[in-house]
Image (cartoon, rainbow, N blue to C red):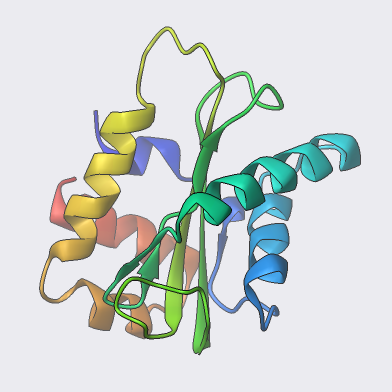
Length: 150
């Protein structure tokens, strides 16, 4: 399993419009192209997860994630905010890179935790934050995932 398999260009936004945590979550959710009711439900689930503790893992990266009935298979999205957003990350710094992961409650292929782990592993690569800053097009993000072989 490779991360590249789960991302599509239309679920990658290299300049988020949002300036706060709640709006970032909503904007990431919108990349999944769900109906309005599903988006509202998913937002509530992600907010609940964030209230347990921020998914801002440091190094300018956050990985908001949850399980929800609004999807029938694992879905992911990536967003970047050059100016950074206060996401209450564990290192106290603003977050520029957001990886959204949503999976159904019961998932036969059980990819939720492995995908979460692979994104965390990818995020720890020394050059990844700078490489994410330099992206000009969504396909370059996909190429970076392939290059890192995660």
